[in-house]
Image (tube, rainbow, N blue to C red; front, side, top):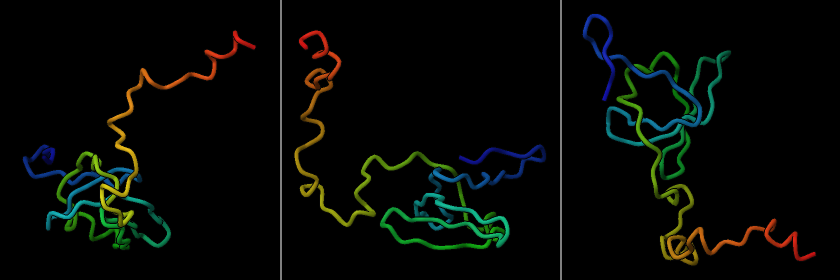
Length: 105
């Protein structure tokens, strides 16, 4: 949801590299670069498509800042079953800490 200016109008979030946003058309994208000299913003959509937009168009392009997607596979062109072992199957308690082996040396 957009924050509001003092006059009650919607405040457009500033582009920040690494932050995810939703466009006015509903597309989700991440800021991957900005170029102050060229006055451009480079964005990458969830599917991996990269686009460069004019900084002056930012206000008319972005709707709101959003949380990053939990499923990072969009730009990888991979199906969920191609990830390998289910990450949820591995519990933190099952991980071995290499420092635990120090006293055995």
